[in-house]
Amino acid sequence: RQNCKDFVCTFSGPIPLQDYFDIIDHHFELRLNAMKYEQLLAERAIQFRAIERSLLTRFKDKTPAPLQHLDTLLEGTYRQVIALADAAEENQAIMFQAFTKLKSVTQLVILLISLWQKLSVDQVAILEATFLPLTQNTQELGWEESVDASISHLLKTCLSKSSKDHALTLFNQLCIPKDTNRLKKHITLLFDRLAKGGRMSLNTDLDCHQPMLLSGNCDTIPESDFEERAATQNSTMFVNHRNVDKQDNKSETK
Image (cartoon, rainbow, N blue to C red):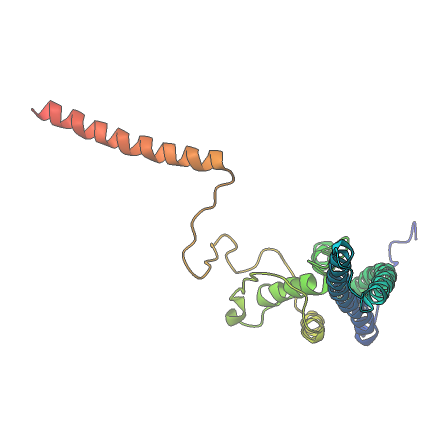
């Protein structure tokens, strides 16, 4: 309130994690359903085209042969494709609503944990960046794997218990997980360490400027063909310049 300096919002806890996990599981189940619908649609589409080619071959044949119920199979497959497409579209709409609900509940959980542990503005900003990394969901990159990677980074850096946890694990590729058990375990561990006095900060004891080495030798990838040609020309000019200097030194010696 205005003109009230001693007004403070508090929350005594605990965080309702089970309700939060139920919402996460519901959203993840809809993502799995979307993948199943996509796979079934691809299979039925291949089947439909195969039946269609067989029918066209029969119609082009100069000596007509029995259709052997290919027309019935074509019609049945077409109906299956339409039904699967409608189901996939309906699942997509429900998943959009579930993702909106998930983002809203996540914002509420962040607010509760900030009031419970009296987090600073910077720490709340880190939590928001960790739990709300995506504005929309896609099949290639979803909320679950993105948040899991972000929480894992926090647990191994500023919220680590020992120096052994500072070893960073590089994620080669984020893909949809088999289940949400790992994510829920990491969320529980994150809130547990915050409850025990852990604080998040972008300035950790770990040297952020230290380069992280990948397994194997990696060469620099040029941004374009022009950059690659320019780099080659510069290296050639450098070698030629050294050869010219050597020849000049020999001539001066003579």
